Image 1 (cartoon, one colour):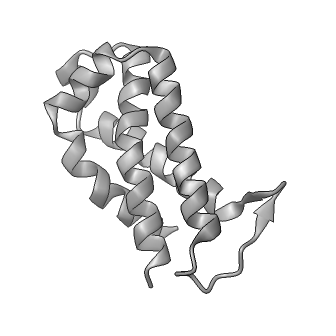
Image 2 (tube, one colour):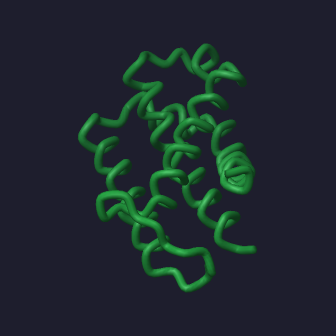
Image 3 (cartoon, one colour):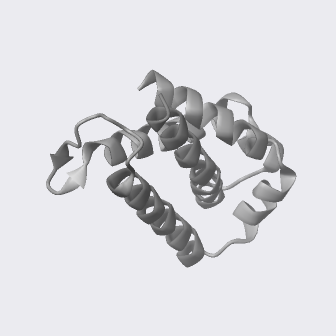
Length: 121
């Protein structure tokens, strides 16, 4: 889990401070935000389930890889906390819906980082 947190933070921080991300979060429609969320989960699922990089036994919970659950939980929680800690919500004047959109957009990169650092040992 520590590796996943480090990967999520490392990959998401550069995008967290990009004003373009904030503007996208302000203007994106909810269905596009949902599409980004689902696309991120799908790509993460493919990478985790089809990857030959890790020697760790692939455990599942109701046919969902546990690694996918931990990676996405860590990544989304990390993104929520980073946006809050750095005060991006106040700087960008994000509403609750925009905050959620920003979290999902930043978490796309956090998921990639968490998977990359977790699987490369």
